[in-house]
Amino acid sequence: MTNLNLDKNKKYLLACSFGPDSMALFHLLVKNKYNFACAIVNYHLREESDFEVDGLIKYASNFNIKVHVYDVKEKINKNVEATCREIRYKFFKDLCAQFGYDATLIAHHQDDLIETYLMQKERQNNPIFYGISSETMIYGVNVIRPLLHLKKSDLQSICDENNVPYAIDKTNFDISILRNKIRQNTVSRMSDYEREEILNKINEENYNLAKLFKSIDIKRLNEVDYVVSLDFVSQCYALNYLVKNINASYSLSKKNVGQIIKVLKSPKPNGQFMIFKGLYLFKEYENFEFGVNKVEAKEYKYILTCPGILDTPYFYLNFKLDSSDRNVDHDDYPLTIRNIKNSDFIIINGYKAKASRLMIDWKMPFRKRMTWPVILNKNGEVIYIPRYRKDFQFSDELSFYVK
Image 1 (cartoon, rainbow, N blue to C red):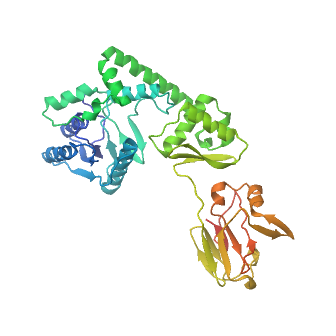
Image 2 (image 1 turned 135 degrees about the vertical axis):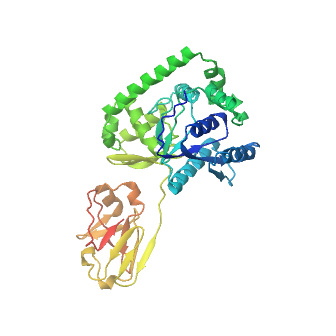
Image 3 (image 1 turned 180 degrees about the vertical axis):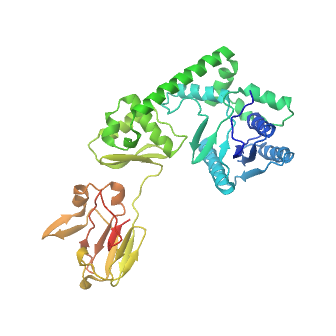
């Protein structure tokens, strides 16, 4: 029952809350002589939080186990669950990088697995995995869950039988929270037979998802035409796969997926669309991707008074020797280099060409348009617009290139 299937040659970080689950895992790690340290976050959201941190430090000192504490200073008053999750996983990531921990251990158990599955069904989620995976990456952290074969009651018994201290979070009894409601009203009342049935169902659904995964070309998931060509079930899986890589806690509903497919099918080739707060879809001609922030234009302007070098976050320019291939001569100085505007125009072969038309003809992605440079002469006339090429090849010999 207490086999953790961990590597004794590795060094682990135990995410500990001083609850019975993580304290049971603490006991099993000590008992089986694993190399580990603890990490605990004090969010200061409950009166008991200081007591829990002190309790863990005191108990861990009996075994010479190091405890890393993150004391949250900022006030958390909105998006509490997501904010706390982000805080602790960034903490875990920093600790693993600083101290060389191979993985972070989380004390999720069989009840958590079943609760998560039932919540996914209740919310009609389209996950890339049902329940909870035994090993995964979250915010760049390698996470292992070695207790998924044990019930919550098993873990509390381990603590009680071995005099392991723990605290009960009273917010776990608030049934206005969906997970707590499922825990109290459904999972805690399940017989062993009912548990076995639902675990078999979870395994079956994950087997089907694995088959679906094999049928999808992961390398083409950012191609508009490819995703549009998939059936709806595959689209749900593929898009959730992409979104999970942005934020592991994000999940797309069927409504979200339908909204995304509608955007991908629309004749508008370029743009950004908010799917929900914190998730944006960027469509750029044949390709698309997701991001967490809306893209805003960044105004910039640089002055070059005489032939020289400019190395900026947006472009590199070296006009010390010759700039005739950029339509620049000595009489044009001082030059102004700024980001392009739709109203800009340039004379090409005697004809007036609007910048907005050129960007469309070049199929320039809208995010590149935000910072694409143009060169103006001393009279404020646009004399050079670097051509956008999707297949651009960088070379050290270039006198001007966009970063």
